[in-house]
Length: 623
Image (cartoon, rainbow, N blue to C red):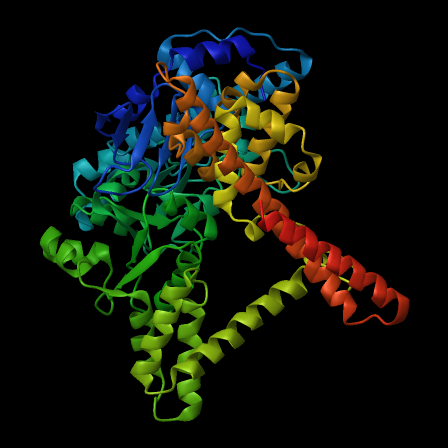
């Protein structure tokens, strides 16, 4: 990572205006001391995205995203911290000086190499696109005409033609100064086995540039034009540093903003299907690129939408892909609907035959994922046969199982039981069997990750769920705004050991550390400047304080100040006592379990320890 001087980062932080940056993405309105907007990261109609102009932080009460100006740019532009700093520096005209050492120079050389390779890919896309108008590209133009693809679509998606030559692209790129190493690294050429000779990968084909979410060309997919050719219909770029097909969705760079307007994403099988959907006004359509749909794809979609519609072919392979993709999307918490396409048709053929109206009409007729799979399975199996009935239940539960929301999961099981006229508890029992089988497979695949069981005399480690996130949020807010409470916590060794290693716990420890160094007033800014500000739990504390009215204000007399101090001290004590009580509960449970296995003097000692712990807990209750 190239080194950027801290003073430059600070200058950017001071120059950047988070309200202005957000307003470039979505309308912003002031309400009181804060600004509010519809979240740019997920679809919503009521503004829940809060911007604190003084702290220059944000928090969304809907999707829980939070952070500072750098985090906002990282998420919006999909880059890392350095990329966000450089992006903001360019925006505000701030020069980043060259302070590189030898290692940084090497990193800079690699960065320059990557930028040159990306430029090569982009230039190649433009060259292929320009070639489409050449006489030799007549077969490609005829093919596009036969598929009803007009000039607007050709230009928007930068479709092109790769000359039917073993080295036309290589010779063209060399004339522009690109090296053979760059051509190999980007997958534009192929090296012959046992030889240093290379040749063009894409020859005599219609080319589809593949772009990442930033619109950068990272690879190509190329379709054969001769229907009689004994070769693969499509040739794709190989896996490179630039092209990882499991992380790319075709047309995602166009569809990303449309997800928010439509409230959903539409997943098709191929590029021509996606192009047809966009031409019909369904500009939220994307497709996996040369691979099956992956969890990364699902996470990519989840950043911009909460609902997905699947429009795969109606054949057997399409149905299998639909079911598999349903489970992946459910596992990421996305709601799923399915379009049932007519047999033998796909979005592209429907658009060519019936135009935009026909395609939008069919795409509007969706079925939720679970009922869709249920209908498919019932068409394949006889519900009156117990064995066939069991297959239906198991297959449908495979799609229900990944759902995280227990209420939603139970609701689907209840619906399934009603449809099949079997007891609900039977479906729930089978769900547990299916769930356990997946856990067993997971455990056997990674045995090193299985935790060792606790021995009777071992205490379980403290974990946050025992106390509750709200307690740590209140504690963090109190010590952020009241130095005397931060000092008290810094001096309490008993409580210090109970702070968990979670983002909230790390933020609390950061305040304690700054306080111990005599720099308590710097603690809040330190958290804002760190990655902790991007954590939803920490971000909520920074942007939505609950104890704001208890801060001393100018004009408060001594009695009012003292009254506020007593209230925040009482809240602080409640938090500390809850931490201590829950720690005692853990210890009491461990001793109690040990007592069931011991006898004689050891049992007597455990009984004394048990009584002492109970007495300590009762003493805390009286505080």
